[in-house]
Image 1 (cartoon, helix red, strand yellow):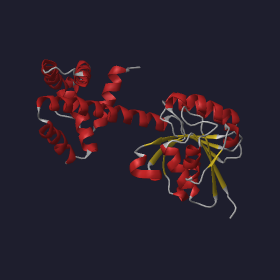
Image 2 (cartoon, helix red, strand yellow):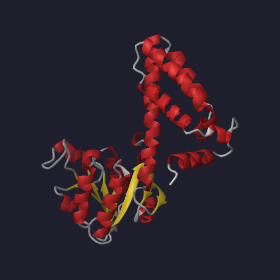
Image 3 (tube, one colour):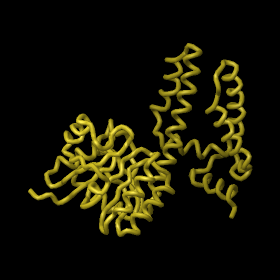
Image 4 (cartoon, helix red, strand yellow):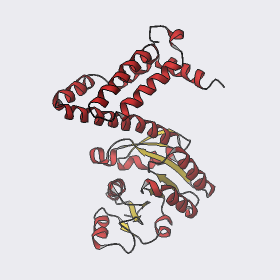
Length: 300
């Protein structure tokens, strides 16, 4: 059977390897890859070459080779080099090519690369992994935006990919991913701080269940709405509570980095002076709180 689609990967880590193998399962797709990272770069080791070829992917020696003739070019490199690599890809883009950037870079970088690709006649996709490859494989949600997002969804769907389109502007999905990271990494920091304290205090199991069991019984979206709606009337007393906890942790020999930051965030909410506007009854819609915060913090 003739191959009707050629997909080129720049970088070949966990995500690229998984995606390449998924595409290569179809006989109508040709898959190629180029890698120029710290560990894997031309001349490639036999072990790396064997790992790539085991996925059904042809390994090439230059960026020109992987970009030229590919219908889709997927950038999957380290974040530190993502902009430089993206610019190099853009310089080689041919009209009609689709460039998909799955690197976890900030929105401004995605927008910059989109402009560079589109100036050459290509289409750009700001794609973001919204889960773990180790759990979901190639069916992980790819939250995507940009001029080529709809085309990418249509092209990738027959091969089992889960592309969710946020809109036509590059940077939109990257911003959502960035804010999601604010929450998930923030939760990580809070859990580590709390559980480290629990370990020092000899109550590890009790604390783990005390933290997790109530959360397991509550939808996260419900919890998030509750937090936003009650922030105005209760941020003040919560700040006082957290300030006392900061002192307690310090007396236990714990540096309360996350607890101190939480205290400050609650104080900042209180300082906006919106309790008089809403009273002691939380609003019905969390968006009312966010709109009020925006009006006070950015009145123009």
